[in-house]
Amino acid sequence: MTFALSAAAKPPETPKAKFHVSGLGWWDDREMRISLERLLGEQRGETVDANAIEDAAFLLVSAIAEQGFLKPVVAIEFTTVSGEKQKFAFDATLGTPLPRPLAATAVTF
Image 1 (cartoon, rainbow, N blue to C red):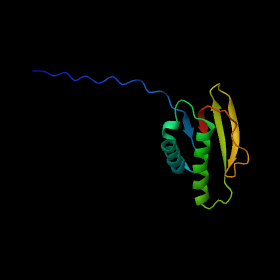
Image 2: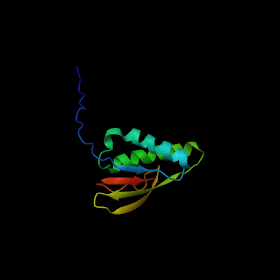
Image 3: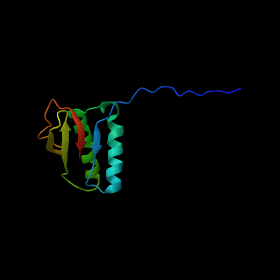
Image 4: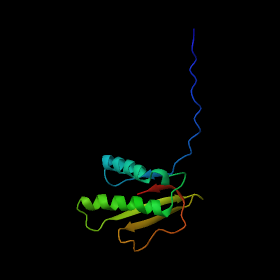
């Protein structure tokens, strides 16, 4: 008697918005990127909005502040759906919020 195993058909996964962290050191960059992906969970689809990017930036700012930096500023570069790249300096005071509406396919902190 023979049995055939059939693999259940998985629906194709939709691509997720990409995150990249640099400037903290190789290991810390990797750990922070994983933390950001975990934090955003369902908010991270094909694109992320300004609120999700600001949430991620707050996490980074607090992690940097824990290392003793008093007024950390995070440089954010994001790619919009149309392919346009924009740069933004984020600080915890939210003196200048990210532009809205915003849909980014890739974000570098």
